[in-house]
Amino acid sequence: MFNKLENKSGIAIFEKNLKKDSLKREMLEVASTYWTGKLENSGVNQISYELGNGNIVLSDKELNKFKKNFSTYISKIFPKKGNYIMLWTSNGEYFKRVGTDSYLKDIMRISDLPMESLPSDVCMWIYPERIEVEADYNHFILFDESLNNVKKMD
Image (tube, helix red, strand yellow):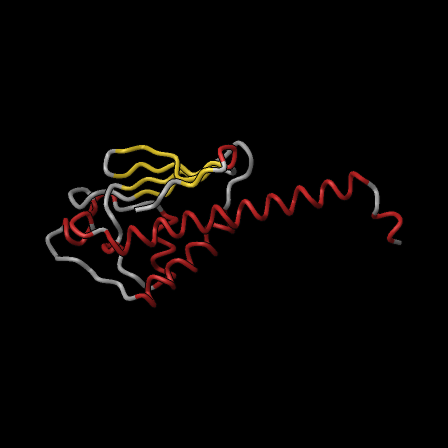
């Protein structure tokens, strides 16, 4: 039985899938850590603050719950080659009309957190091999497999 499994193409496929799963886990960690950090440190850039309601302070337990739910949710919709997913928030001025994308709405609902605790004007594109972010009017690559590069997160 094992003699049949020692074929090189079978091993290559197995190794490729391990590498792909490892990359996906690493990217989920980077993305969830980024959003969790933004939730924790948004300050005057928090939607609630921009709406004039003051800051919503989240506990460590709530932040950890968000991070776990974010990773679980995004892992189920992780993009395939040639596609991407986009996560975005509006600012306080447009929040009541525009809101945020449906993925973040679901993650916040699952995490039992208020939408207004999200940071304003953040956009993240998750591709199969990289993560790009636009925040504070800056566009940068947060993670890129080909560069073996992870940007220092704020």
